[in-house]
Image 1 (spheres, rainbow, N blue to C red):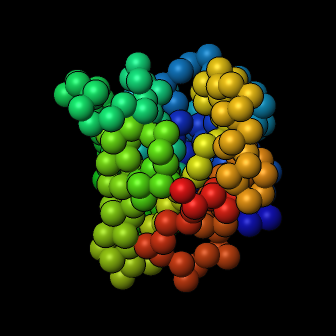
Image 2 (cartoon, rainbow, N blue to C red):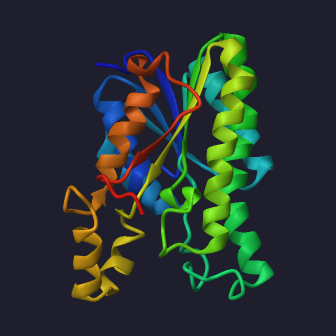
Length: 253
């Protein structure tokens, strides 16, 4: 029971990797605060997760909502031990795989903001609490696109996720002296509720090529990513910080 007595705040927790992470932490004794901006999905997730899960409706890109949520969690539970920043993705624009000349400035800014602002705002709000506690675990969601390792990802998404990798490393130096670790995962294609419809639209040949290029010969599911997040958020990783772990089934390009 790695998370007994721990308070974990998880963004984008109503589905996908965030929900899978909340599920593991709740089953392993943690109190999980699930943050999402979709009320119906959040209600369904809380029902599935059980009594140790608590919900907060919040737009992670709006500081006027983020700060009160964090303050309310501290007021109710007394502390925040774990922050998982799971907000992000590329499917909020019509062509996620757009090249730089195909991107409009509006699409570029949407992707950058969606993938960076939520992580910044929740980290900004939680860090003073963790510093005061002299303890904390922050886990961010990057992508292999952020290493330039995904031919299917657009330049804006690659830039945003590269920013998450850089932020993770920088924060590890800032927060290490206060007992706070900061790490990230860099997933490959992962079949979440949001991504699966796009996967199903691909031709059998395209799917087979993706699977064939992956040494483990399958595509990731949310639990594959959540397990590594939970390792980084647990005491097993107390001497690990500033690291971004590629969770790709061995895929290297």
